[in-house]
Image (tube, rainbow, N blue to C red; front, top):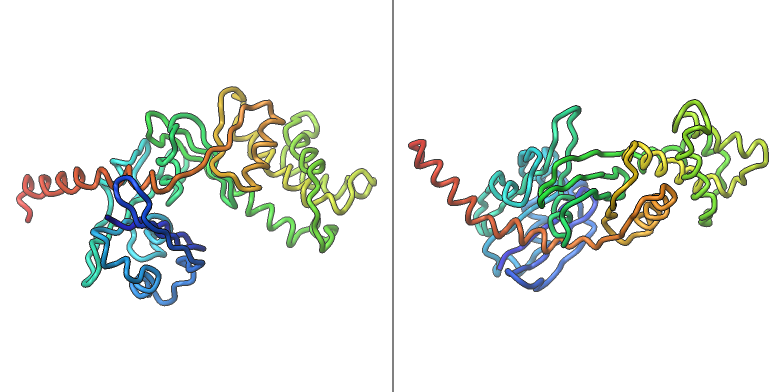
Length: 307
């Protein structure tokens, strides 16, 4: 029996697991950003309570393993699978706690560095682990998987840029204080983004249309927010797909944002499917390789004359 923890910057989620079953779950809003003065041990004890007496090991994934977290772990280079996480995990011992295992993130270094910490657990827990996957969010990840290994990562900051545009920009001044979803405006934004002949430029030129269309009474102020969302997600998809719009794309999650990605991808005539992440299955696949990794480490120490 062991504990697997997904500890992001904004949330804490712990699962009590054995090889086949989720025995319990604990959640809170105590993300790493809310842990003051590096008091991660105290936070862990408070969150887990009597679980600590039941566990033989605790696995950590997410921002808790970053340089701004508790113990920094390295990045496993692509292509990387569950066995690579197990092999490169950082083991840490604290008196009165089970062995702590901080899993690495995953990184590619060329042509520019790109990384993920935590999302890989959801991907490794999927039933189908080959193809192109999208993980929507403020920093959306487009991930290629081959043979159960993550082989390529691209991060798009579309969500964060969209929030900035809606809060503090030339366009934001026209957006009403109250919001009501406008699906047609979202679709219009996506179509504007994917019609490459609409303007000489791309997304940087098209953002201004959220203002110019209003000036010419072709877009209502109440439609701006969803039109902008369509523009940003559409531009992201156009860039991610490039000339290759064929094949199946899996969208990880069943959130409203994931639904928007599905709508947008279908407007690009792409085959898009929502898939359910299972972090318990992902952690199990990593945990099942812990014994192999520990044995390899000991053998390496012996071979090098270490102790």
